[in-house]
Every structure is written in C-alpha cells, then in structure tokens.
Image 1 (cartoon, rainbow, N blue to C red):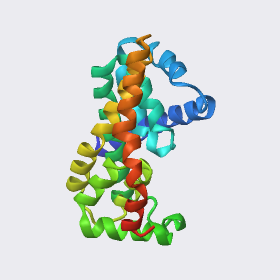
Image 2 (image 1 turned 45 degrees about the horizontal axis):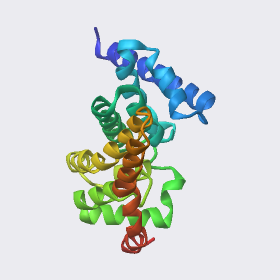
Image 3 (image 1 turned 30 degrees about the vertical axis):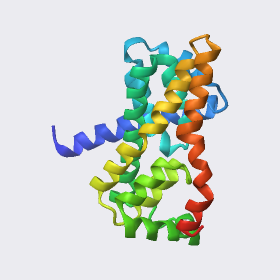
Length: 217
C-alpha cells in the first residue's frame, strides 16, 4: 500500500470518529453521566476502546472532560475506569499538542493573539515543564486551553508529555472515584468520593488568585 493511501485511510477514519463525537455533542450535550454510561456499555467488549477514542478526540469539540471521567467510573469501576480515563485524557492532550504544534492549524487564529494568552505563553516558554505541570495540577486554567497555549510555544513535546502525564493523575482519580461511588448505593462511599474530589480538585482553587497573579492575569 502506498503511503498516500495510508494517509487517506487514516484521514477517513479520523474524520469518521470526529463526526461521531460531533453527533454525540449535538444530540447529547446536556445528558448525564448515567445516560452516557448506558450508551457506552451497550457496545459490550469494545466499549473501553470506543470510550478512550472518544475521550482522545474530545478536546476538538470541547465536550466536558468531567462527564467522561465520571462516566468511566460508572461504566468500568474504579481501577479500570481510572486506566481508561487516564489514557483518554493523556491521548487528548498529546493529540492536541501534535495537531496544533506540528500542523499549525490554529497558529494564525486571531483568538490566540489575546494579551492575557500571550502572558501565559511567555510564562510557559520561560519555565517549561515545571509551569505546565503546575497548570495541570492546579486547575487555574481550562485543561484544553493549557494544551492549546502550550502547543503554540517552544516547549518540547517530551516535556509537555511528561508534565501532562503526571499532572492529570489527581483529577483522574478524583472524578473516576466519584463516578464509581454513584453506583455503590452507599452514602458513605458517595461522601468519600465527593470529599476526595474536593481535596484533589476543588481545594487547589484556593490558590487560584495567587496563581493568576503569578501568571499576570
């Protein structure tokens, strides 16, 4: 098979998957994790694969990542749910970097020439992996926004990948456990899940003002 045909088939597959994600966003944007779970599990043994692929493509349609993570816990349990959430979240972050940085798709878009975004990009370029990791651990800025802005800097893909791989662990655990707790039927387990989510995700928001000042926003 010639290389051109390989790329054509790959492009068709990606286009089909993106079309599926867009269809889901249009028809089920307001649906609950429970409804998403019912749709996912009907695919049987290939459900994990479909879930990870959709999660990986999620950043391109700005579908809420929290819905995916909670649904993963509901559908696959805590341990497998954490794995699939992690793979999908990491895949989405890496694919976003590749699409923007390598293909230059959004480099000339006026919306990225915002003064505040420029400050963040400059900070990312100066501090590199350390700053990207900080932005991943502390949800001061939207996950996808961090991916987009980092992709427009000179930060190496390896450094970005390491920072993302480490930084998404707390959120992965918290949201997946919350989804798992919703199926337990135990108020105690639900409270534990909610508390864990607060400690790992909401609590860092206390540093949001300080972080924004550091960034210059």
